[in-house]
Image 1 (cartoon, rainbow, N blue to C red):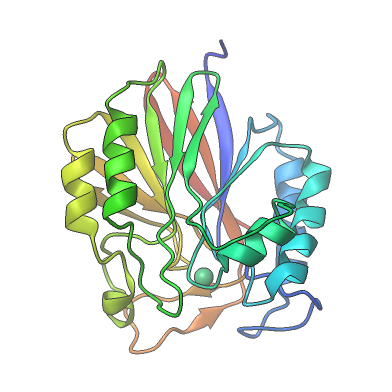
Image 2 (image 1 turned 90 degrees about the vertical axis):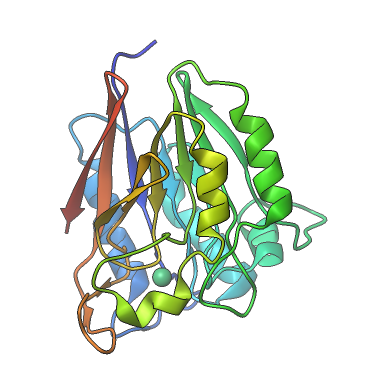
Length: 250
Ligand SMILES: [Fe+2]
């Protein structure tokens, strides 16, 4: 069993099928910059976690494009879905499911004893998210069994943010219900995306950390989202039971 597990969290790639422009950037170019940086890391990550907004409303073709773009890394990928995602298109274009439908996409992944629980907070047509009672019940059952090296929870929507008043109605609506399920358990950390900025928030006895977006950054403390064309990702390590996160801007 590896002493230290390193992995990367990417988020909000907002990939378009035609390599065009959105939010004043070309997501395909931003993604290429981040992937080049990840490929050059001195310690190869064990896996890649994507915390949602994989595509920007670009359907099956967008997901197929993302799958091809990530393939050269040769790393396992854990994905969670965001408000710009589409479950059925993701299942068809990214997972290559033959009979794709819009069932929620959540599950458990294990890497050298570290458990990643990927939740689905997508609410079709809404900016904000919700885990929902059925998924929360599944999560409670899943957490009843401890993991050898602990548990990290991943989802797209953060629970609360400092300085993002324009996102106040666009976060996780049932955050208090999620807190009630997580609080009895030793959760190493919660990793999220959505706000296109690195942040950390105390929550349910653990910490919610968000990643800078691959596509572009949103500025906190503005009346509307000022967009910066910078790109980035989170470099993460599990060391001695602790989660260490460094946001890397490229
Ligand atoms: Fe996003």
